Length: 172
Image 1: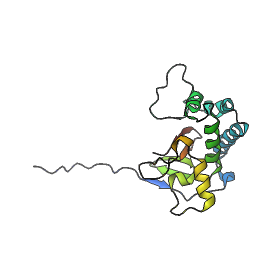
Image 2: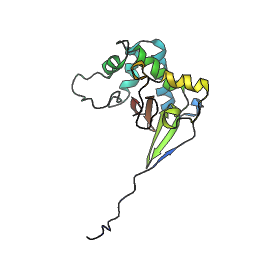
Image 3: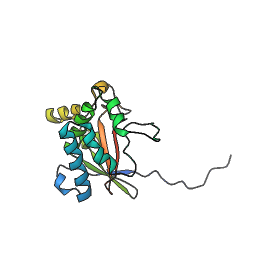
Image 4: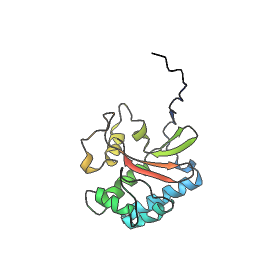
């Protein structure tokens, strides 16, 4: 049998920054999006989240595998994923996520800002404050479930370097 001598491109590796807590150092457009998200979460009114969701040409992904057709409402997705059925649980989780330290993740030419940092690089032995913050980033329904790496299903937000809000999903 002949040996395959074709060269294959290696998979791009993520380059993850150290966790950062200085939200003032974010690029202005990303800082503005973060501020708008936090303003909406502080209101405890899911409808206030519509403004930052609609900043994008395409809405962020709030649940894997959904078909987005005419009449699709991303806020309705958050309501159905929320324990209370009104979206308040997801607003609370989103606030906890966006208040946490963040990392930048580079994959090839693309860079993203990801919250919380511990959702990307979990601490080996988190202190009590970090452990409690991690719990605030998990849906009530997901407590006790684990991702593919054996860690908790922590929700993460990913925002592109161009300030496009890509996702708000649990880590799988």
